Every structure is written in structure tokens, then in C-alpha cells.
Amino acid sequence: MVDETKLETSEGQPSFIISPKHDNAWLVEKAKETNNRLNGIADDVIANARELTPSVNWHDILTITTWHGVNRPVYGKFAVQRRVAGAIGNMARIMSWNMDNPAVVYMSGAVFVKVLNEKLESLGYVLETLKKGESLLDEEARNIRISEREAESGKFGVFRARIIKSLEQYATSHLPMAGNPAYLELLRKIPFTGHDSMAKEKGKAIRAFKNGDLTTALEQINASLKRRSDSMWR
Image (cartoon, rainbow, N blue to C red):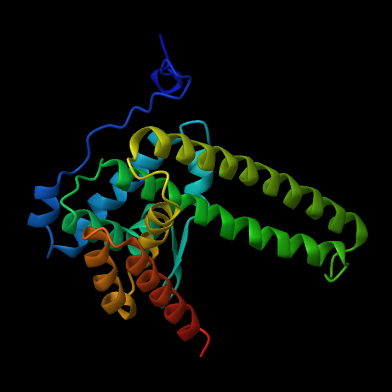
């Protein structure tokens, strides 16, 4: 049996097999049904990312995908649902995109690059602390822990590199504005603008994006993300 995920085009690029997802009519119909809508969008985001990069362990990646709620953190699909599904779904609805639109597929993969960046940053901090001897572990236990964390960091680093490569290849072959860095940066950042405090700037950004004014769109997104980040530390 041929593994379709590894087929290549005549130019040597992977032939991405992206299955149909929820269409725009569904996004419009379910706009006010929060739980059902976000649940379906989260399923689509995860499926898009899996199909974009089938060569990584998605069980491991979803295990570290986290959203820190008021009472406790949630993981996996529920974290995707809480953290990015609203923003991605709203963008798709407003832009009249289906959930398998190339821009949505790109955003879906980009979500997990950020997840892996956060995990690798956390592991880097842990390793630095262990190597400095700033722990209560004896030397043998500390060396074992260092070895485990280095292996974990190496694994997730490989996953990140593979997803980034898939994103680059997919953008080149499926996104007409792939040569515009601002366009790709917007697609990477928009999923993380779902918090209510960002609504004003996000609305302006999406209107500017729809009108082709990518400079204004990116300025608004960056402003909203900075304000959200700053407010978390007040």
C-alpha cells in the first residue's frame, strides 16, 4: 500500500493530503453555540496539523499542549479548544474560509510550533538549573534527570523542526502570498488573540487583513498581544 502522506509532486515537494473539514456555512450557523463550535474547530485544527506533518508523534505533542485556566490547567484537545479555537474559527468565519482552507491549515500547524517553543524553553530552564546544581537531588539522581530532560528536549526539537519544514513547504505550494513575511507572521499570531481583552485590536486587524492592509493588521495584532502580555504581569 502506498503511503499517500509521503507522495511528492514533480517538483519534489510533498503532496499534502488535507481532508475536508467543517465548511464556512457551519461556522456561521454555529457562531453562537460556543461549546459545540469550539469542539468542532479544535478537532479540525488538530486534524489539519496531523495531516500537515504526519511524521511526528502527535500523542506526545498534545500531551504537552496546555491552557492554564482559572482553577487548573487543561491539556490536549481541550487546551486547543480553550486557547486557539475561538480565534481561528472567527477568522475563518469572517474571511469566508472553510476549516480546510490553506490559511487555516497553516495557522493550525503554527499553533503547535508555539506549543513546542514553550516546552523547549521550559526544558532549557530546567536543564540549566540542574546543570548548575541548583536542586535537592544527589549527583546520581541529578545526572539521570539531566539525561532524561536532554532526551526529551531532543525529541521535541526534532518535532518542531519537522513541523516548521512542513509549514514552509506548504506555504510555498498552497499560499499565494507566501512570499510576504507579514502575511505569514499574521497567520502565526492570530490564533493566540482569542482573549476578550484583545477584541478591539483583533477586530481592526481582521478588517485590515480583509482589505489587504497587512501592515496595519500586523500592527494591531502586535499591539493586542503586547497589551495582553503586559496585563498578565501587572
